[in-house]
Image (tube, rainbow, N blue to C red; front, side, top):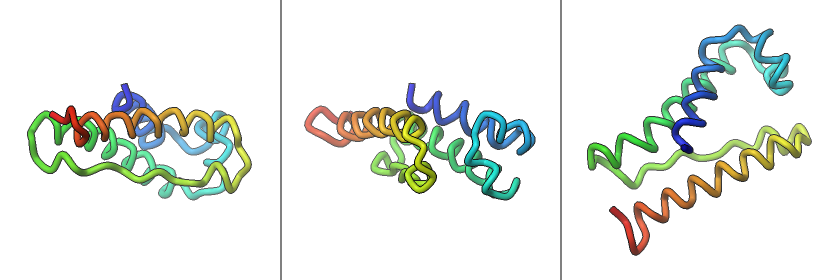
Length: 102
């Protein structure tokens, strides 16, 4: 589910015009179109990073870091959403690397 969320967000940011994104994602207005696309590509990489290591058995220790842009912009709803994604990512990491790792 976490990889799906990263994938959807990544495709949206990597393919849609910045003006359309800024209507739904106010933070996008503060960044260049290239930076927004780069964030989208990074999110797509995060989605792949969550799925491919487990599927291939190659470097399963890799996990993507989180950004703090929303805290700086004082966007509590975005922070809450990202906190949920962080908890899901932490659970995935624990499940893969913890006592029940696979």
